[in-house]
Amino acid sequence: MTRTAIIGGGISGLTLALLLRDKGHSVRVFEASDQPGGAIRTTRSPDGWMAEWGPNTIIESSGRIKRLVSMLDLEERRRYTDHAAKKRYIVRDGRMVAVPGSAGGLLSTPLLSTSAKLSILREPFRRRSRNDHDETLADFVRRRLGDEFLKWPIDALVGGIYAGDPERLSVRHAFPRLALLEEQHGSLILGQIKGGVRRPPGSEEIPRNKAEIFSFDEGLQVLPDTISSRLGDAVSFQSPVKKITTVNGNTATGETADRSQRWRVHVNDPLEPPQDFDVLIYAGTSYGLSGIDFPETLVPLLTPVTEIPHPPVISFTMGFRRSDIAHPLDGFGMLIPGIEGFPILGTLFTSTLFPNRAPDDGHVTLTTYMGGSRQPEIAGMLEEEQAAMVVSSLRKLLGLSGEPRFRHRILWSRAIPQYETGFIRYLTVMDRAEQEHPGFYLAGNYRTGISVGDTINAAFDLAERIHQEES
Ligand SMILES: Cc1cc2nc3c(=O)[nH]c(=O)nc-3n(C[C@H](O)[C@H](O)[C@H](O)COP(=O)(O)OP(=O)(O)OC[C@H]3O[C@@H](n4cnc5c(N)ncnc54)[C@H](O)[C@@H]3O)c2cc1C
Image (cartoon, rainbow, N blue to C red; front, top):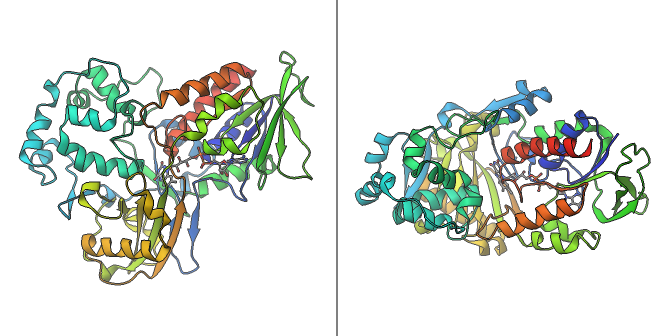
């Protein structure tokens, strides 16, 4: 039986552990903190408010995500977002404008000027990029759709997804679908009309416009909690891995005698003796690699990966009396482009998405994000100053009149990995680290996509690859 160690009990590490155990591996997850889930964590207050620390929703962008939920018998507890939450708003000239849902709506929307709309109509006639360079998202959008499309919808979207900067993100790495639409169809608009990016045969991908969005009855933490309880004592909490060494010979139970090198995992606990494994998967954060003493052949390959930028993000969930907000909150939320000059990136109408986030119909919750690459300095301000900036923005944008009745705030000093231009250099060293060190694998949101759905999807791919390579 292959003995497999997984460092990190976020959704990447837990999903890998579950899938590899199902494939016959003996797995052990080492998690530094005292609970599973990494960025996924939910708080419920005794008086009925619920707040997510990190992600609020998962996009069901693949049949594999459905499969994971059903493997865990969680279908009954899954909650799809209310259809009332389909509408999305972007702020333009200080006002909330609904994002048009159709081509007709695009022509009449006040979100864009007439010249920007004409520029979109010309998009299919623009030539595709002739050179192969790693283009920023901003250059790509300016080239295909024009500057105004970049400054409002795209800047808003990038703030909402990456808390990032379109002038720095790589279109190929951060938004591969956009790059592929141009590559395969010569045009984003024609590509969409023709059914989007071509999917490889057998792909379980669900197109974004058809994918449902969900959480669970008690919030997203239900997912890592359930995986962790299925894994039982295969998951060790408060077990930060400090050192990895290699040893020759088989592991204690090693029947896979064809490879002589094994991985020895040292945990920062004097009572826990080092343990040997056939396979080692690092599923922590990219910056966390610097906290582990790796064998010297791995150090030059992993050190660059620790430099992937992660700007800070502050997440505020606030509860209000429904009657204190003038806006109907009839949608998913609002995104705010940098050019609008607000100190917030956007706000999710969290209790419209999932009504059980607030104690009753008379109350609502809103989750607001601040900081990111756009305004990292906000992370250094006092919590009270940050809260005041959120409330004042909500007063202007949503017609808020009262004060928050509930408040939950979390500062992620390193929130989301930025797939900026030049990202290929990280991917190259990660590939080399694996090729030159059989039995060693790297997994997580710093490599294969930042959404929870991406990490689950990547875990399915990696579990299959490890099973093929290690059996
Ligand atoms: C504020 C915020 C909002 C987000 N919103 C969304 C959203 O709405 N939808 C969405 O799809 N995604 C969202 N994301 C992104 C998504 O949550 C993450 O990309 C994803 O959860 C990452 O999972 P992971 O397992 O790869 O890494 P992590 O969740 O970071 O887990 C890594 C784990 O490894 C552990 N670890 C690290 N080093 C060691 C060590 N040496 N020894 C032992 N353990 C170690 C850590 O303690 C941690 O538990 C959001 C993220 C943030 C921060």
